[in-house]
Amino acid sequence: MSFSQLGLCDPLLKSIKEKGYSSPSPIQQEAIPAILTGRDVLAAAQTGTGKTAGFALPVLQRLAAGPKTKANHVRALILTPTRELAAQVETNIREYKTHLRLKSAVVFGGVGINPQMKILRSGVDVLVATPGRLLDLYQQNAVKFDQLEILVLDEADRMLDMGFIHDIKRILRLLPAQRQSLLFSATFADNVMSLAESITRNPIKLAVTPANTTVEKIEQQLVAVDKSKKIPALTSLIKQQKWQQVLVFSRTKHGANRIATKLASAGLPSAAIHGNKSQGARTAALKAFKDGSIKVLVATDIAARGIDISELPVVINLDLPNTAADYVHRIGRTGRAGAAGQAWSLVSADEIDQLQDIERLIQLLIPRESLAGFEPNQPLPETKLLPPKKIKKPKKAKSTSSEAAGKPQRNGKSPQRNNSSSQRTDKKPQQNGNDPQRSGKAADSNSQSRPPRRRRVNPQAKRKAVEA
Ligand code: AMP
Image (cartoon, rainbow, N blue to C red; front, side):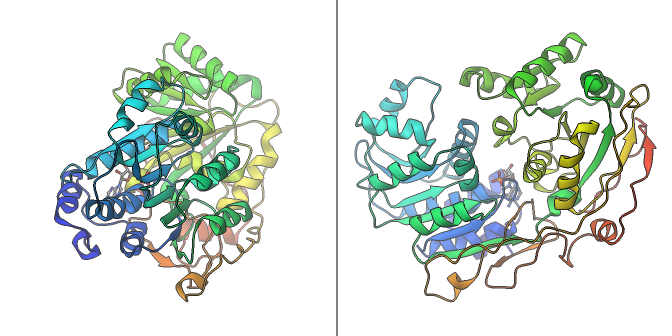
């Protein structure tokens, strides 16, 4: 399928070509025509699937046909959970709208409000915003919604996780009832479904399958190490493997700072990025990481959300995240848009429960490596592959049409461009781990519960060929 078959106009097709996209991703194939109809859409799509273009392109096309935006008004509002994601979404929009006469802007907290008020004065067609700053701007009469035609909630699950529900409800009360609403979320837990019900009307529901392609495309390793030795082990691993660009995850902000400082003093230029850093510091760190002046970026889960660096080669979990879903989010930073990637986890004995949960979710026993000089005094117990957890079916959203009768799948988590297809969810959903389309690798490990083999880290080892 080509982009021109999706009903997009020539100026957008031109920008898509300039971006170098040759064919639409599965979520784009479904979302673009659905949004162009003007209907509400509920889409299960994680970052990395091409979801941004999936909503941005049709939104721009619909706006291109409409009236001029009045002073301080906006015609499409895109809400995102983090500043980084907001900035990234708006950058994409700016690129896609190059050949259209539309204006876009981004507003988020942590930076001065006055320049944002100035930009809004002449009206913007597409406003990308984080909820808190948008409300501040509204209170100052800097933004008006009478002309609003389209609302997009991006990463709705994350917004709820981050406690934005009250802000979102406040914003919804300010918007015209007559509008098109689009909700994108990686998962459809009960809280996301009830939000979706209050926002959308008779939505078309979309999801991408299979669920865990991201995980399968990424070469994952685990190194058992004592908790107290993690930072020296990390330093040794990065040096030994001669990695030039590594994203390291830390569960805490304090931990992120400490790791970055220690790595820097061991001769590895590093920076930390988390919620306590100013926007300027975050942007500078990201820029330095992208241009190679720092090798290691240490991030917390929330700060890392929305970092889009194409072909990020390595992600390291210095500690395991609190939830197994976050592990998938974390390692999804590598191997994006079809590129291969590696994910390493340094795991201490006290993290055995988190490890079990992760392996259960991804239906894979993560291969173990030993790192010379860092063999743990407290051994990491072997794990067994448990059967996948039953996924609770989401509540049905209000609907009358046959399209809306389907249920969105949970965990639509992956760059699906290569070997998967998207589907309307009125087809039978498949659960993680039971998906017959999953790769042989995962299916094998699903059928046997023996412990993974151990290897020694060999920097010269050829990287596993990853299926395209
Ligand atoms: P997203 O899921 O929107 O965060 O997009 C992930 C990455 O995929 C971004 O770097 C996009 O520029 C890229 N991308 C989006 N659509 C396509 C496409 N059709 N072909 C290739 N890359 C794409």
